[in-house]
Length: 373
Ligand SMILES: [Zn+2]
Ligand SMILES: [Zn+2]
Picture 1 (cartoon, rainbow, N blue to C red):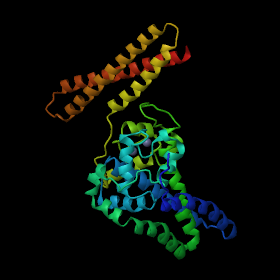
Picture 2 (tube, helix red, strand yellow):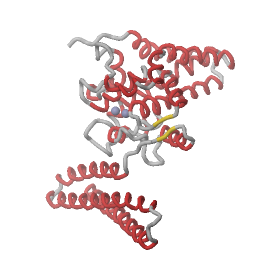
Picture 3 (cartoon, rainbow, N blue to C red):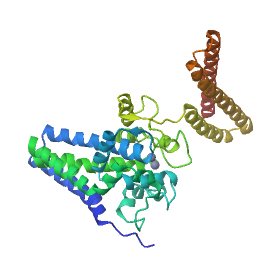
Picture 4 (tube, protein in one colour):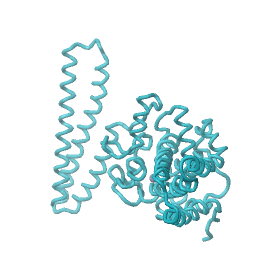
């Protein structure tokens, strides 16, 4: 089969720049030396640009997981552009196709089923799509003036933020080349590969607590490298959620920043999947795995029946609790409710919550038994 043609600008950015980075940076380090200021600028540029891709390109524009103030959107548009990962419009369009057709060899632009290299970088270096860009899946973004402004002035933005600005900062406060090499060149290459890992490694390496219907994985190491994007199995199951790591301790700095921003009015309408949806997805995966294990045991029919029964009971407990939780929250707002009625509701809610806890314990006990048999 004939290969798609190479795209020269992308070959320069994705192949030549890493070569320049791994040769020029060590050469400069040994011959001239970097100052602490040069390094701190490198880190600062890395943090700002990585966060802008995660919070802006990904969660805001591709998934519309929250609303953001004009200033925040402008900031993410400028610094997301600085990562040289194409314009918001192109990035979001590809990404929406990735979610819609995940793992499809032809329609997922960076399909993991075509191997590590293709999903990591190969898809960008050659013109696999052919023909003009199709923005039919990002019509909402075409109406966003900041997105269109960034699309129009993308090249200028890339040159100013990656070259002119580091050179100027370096010239004013340290050495022009020192800051440029770390905050411009090295930072760009490192950020590229960290982000690309989400398309490649996060579809190969890690756990699948929410779904095995596609190749996406949760991976803490990748979450650390990408400010939270590594909880990719969760993300593919609940793409509209502004969080990727849902527990408060999950390493998802993007989520923390967006939450803090919401307290001061910079972001709003942060979307979350309901607790019931999340718990159900996780339980269903555990159920599938438990059944698979049970099928291989002696007295398989008895074990399978046991698993099915426990699963059904847990599911009912979860649903009852979640439905009542809504009622309970509504009743809290109702000031006319008698004290006695309120106390009864509170007690019922506590009982249902306790039942969920009990069912969860029983379920874990059963899955532990299955693993031990
Ligand atoms: Zn993915
Ligand atoms: Zn996504």
